[in-house]
Image (cartoon, rainbow, N blue to C red; front, side, top):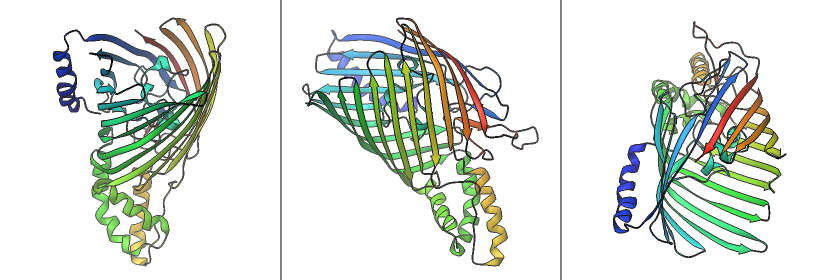
Length: 422
């Protein structure tokens, strides 16, 4: 999300309240991570999906290091404002601050809350704490489920209702708004983000389901748009001759990236935490009507606390449902087939990046201080399509001649981090 979009929100929401209530309660807090990562293979580098720089076989602090500051303001018992700024590596490869939260909440009564401004979209169970490394048992939030949803937050409103149900508490959150987002290779605007999240907690168990929708999303810049702009005339020329479903389905999807597309995201999770045992399992699906692949992912994580140490393991899987490499275009006009083959090869190489993989995790968390956690973690990743040119969390590196460095489909990611709050 761009920091300049938050200024009207801050001016219209937080400042008037502060001026009207000189006795407002202010609290400044923060969080951060100093984290180093590396892989064991020159062919694969690691980063967060929205970052520009990726690092392979040498230790680097680019991917997971960050610093966040949060200002909370409570002018009365019923009103609460929050401003959160997080600095980390962004799409330009520089360490930049961005406003993630800038909203004002009204507690109507113990059951109802209204909120307006900038907030994190509650797609997964870790969405609202994804930047706070200290809040995560492992070195980072689960990549497989947070990677299902391309954005982070939205500007808009939400309403939350909570009520006792049986021995537990149920919370229902409905939200709507719009957003902008940038990746190193793609920038887009989404006019409609909306959905609902239902949370039920009883004793040490929490069950959660969230449904999120995007409508009227459009790519506005980046290398993807440049590539697509150069390909569309040729793709649309062969479209009337398409014979196979892959050809007739994919070309309209590529057109929608810049003209308007939508998506549906479903996430269900179950967690357990009694202070010693920590269990988290989450299943997510993505279905979109542009060329980005439909996908599904599963995350499981189990840890057990022994004094101040918590060893943990995890099994995670993500798979592309309808996009595999390479694509093939079959057309009815023999004179067009050679051109269709060339276009299919370009689309496979330049646009499709299936992230299908299995990731096994083993790690250790040491709560060395009340506000400090030290972690070491090893991820063993096995990619389903080792020939693909990845751009997400795992990036295929290139040789000096521009070709992809040979890759056997297996890579380890090593992580060492110090996560803190203050």
